[in-house]
Image (cartoon, rainbow, N blue to C red):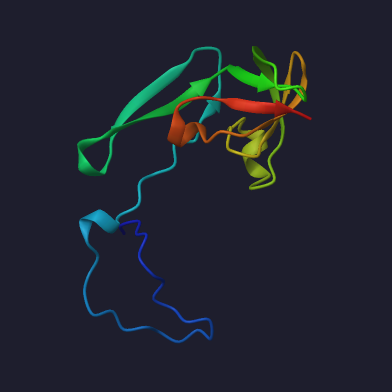
Length: 125
């Protein structure tokens, strides 16, 4: 079954919407990058609409962390502590936006979307 970004076929009451047409290729959703915490940095280039490209981060260890004053420095991630979007991602050490990670400088929250932007940015908590 294809992953689609089209409107749901079910109403809030549970009834069905009858679709006037089938799924189109440009409506199909891609799979999540599932960026993992690992020693080696690995990226992949992905073709997007219009022939443009997007760099996807598959695994990484370093994060650009900004402190309260705005000073930014690169540090190493030690562990994933919590993830409010899905607690099961913590056990698998998967990095998403909003995940709280333990770094050598302290706890940091990931502010970038590593599966979309290809970089890991964060702010100290």
